Amino acid sequence: MRTIRFIVLLVAVAVVVTGVWIAYGIFGDRSRPATTTGVVIPQGSSFSGIAAQLHAAGVIGNTQIFRLYAKALHADTQARAGEFRFAPHQTEAEILHRLQTGGAQIAKWITIPEGYTAKQIAAQLESEGFGDAQAYATAFLRDTIVVDGFRSANMEGYLFPDTYLMPLGASPSTVEAIMSSQFLKELPGDAARKARVRGLTVPQIVTLASLIEREAKADDERPLMAGVYYNRLRLGMLLEVDATIEYALPAHQTVITYSDLRLDSPYNTYLHQGLPPTPIANPGRPSLVAALNPRPSEYLYYVYKGHGHHAFAKTLAEQNANVAKYLK
Image 1 (cartoon, rainbow, N blue to C red):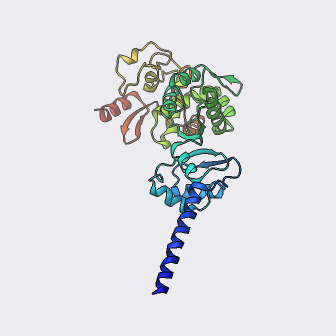
Image 2 (cartoon, helix red, strand yellow; image 1 turned 90 degrees about the vertical axis):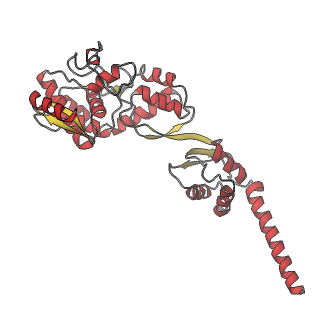
Image 3 (cartoon, rainbow, N blue to C red; image 1 turned 45 degrees about the vertical axis):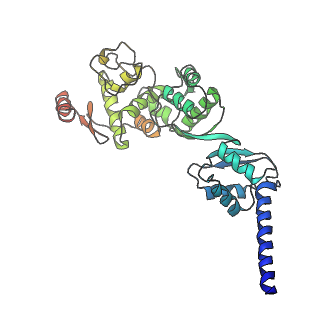
């Protein structure tokens, strides 16, 4: 009987000691991190992956205990991705709280889709907590960049669509620098040479790429669509690209009407010959590559036929037949 009581007592003591040890590890231990420590948590990270990262960086101790504590608080589904900077000597409870609330977060992931305009990017930045959309839009449409010796009219076309770890509280000039630097990295190295071969400047190539970006839906059609534009430019034909009119309209419209085709704007490629004065969106790399490497063909027209693809035509009669077939 005494043996059983002794065993029970030992178990109770062990439980208490373990509980005290766990509680101290979560609420009392301030030995970590030893110094200010930065951690970048990738998008889509599981909480176990986050805990492993924090442990490897010396921010927390026992990952299993940290995970169990987070699960008990239902905090394992609330941790954020991004870049965090943890001050030294914090408890693990404080570390978890900062992960939940973003209190230690200094940068946040943001994805800018291909084909967004400068105004759309500005609106997205505001919606994700990076500041005022109007301030961004004003800067994007005011500031410029020099590419291959030519100064752009503004930043439209040069804010490269990608996923960025953007500093919280970033100024418009900081965002411009980050995104335009990525544009210069993504621009093919032979862009200037290929542009000159076609009698264009690199900014004009970017403008052409922006048309492709807004019109094409399938990557394999981008070079073919580029070829259509080059053919029409060579023959002195109007480009007649609906997306250029949409860009000039004060608000987004799903359908371009016949009255819109008479819009008095330098971006109206139904009225004005040649490329529009600036890019009409921010193209991704596939559209930039297509603009530099058009697929040779005799096509002069195309119409959307559904499911992400277009029907291409060599003559107006073929185009009219395609329009009648696909735009019922």
